[in-house]
Length: 168
Image 1: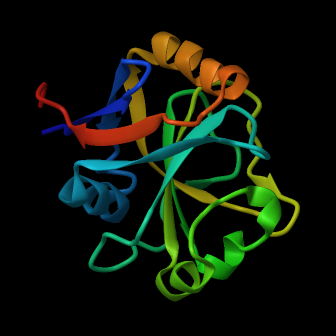
Image 2: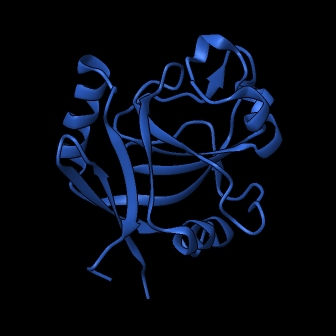
């Protein structure tokens, strides 16, 4: 039976629904599902293009490792990235996380892609494959408009929340 999640930009009051890709990314989908709900300040992609994401302390018993990876996510893809704290240590990223804590725990990046022509390459890291663990099935156009507003209007004060959908 398919599992669905709701993704919300809290301040903007915009949500979309996504289906977890249990067949293609079972470890990643289960790790996310088991940890829900998850909320964090939202960021807009600086390198990947049409992406918003939240950074979370590791929440899975075990990191899922790579599965169903891509470097060219399409509109509606949900991706998981695992970073060591040192991976995101460059001050150019603008993260306000305490560096020692970040280096010790690592970071999980849960992202949604809302437009075309994304390429997961980073000037410091090179190629950054992500695990595609879900796909937006409802509300992509509204979410894309809100994501564009995060880009042009600013992310400060906005929260990205992933929660179990009541439609499942």
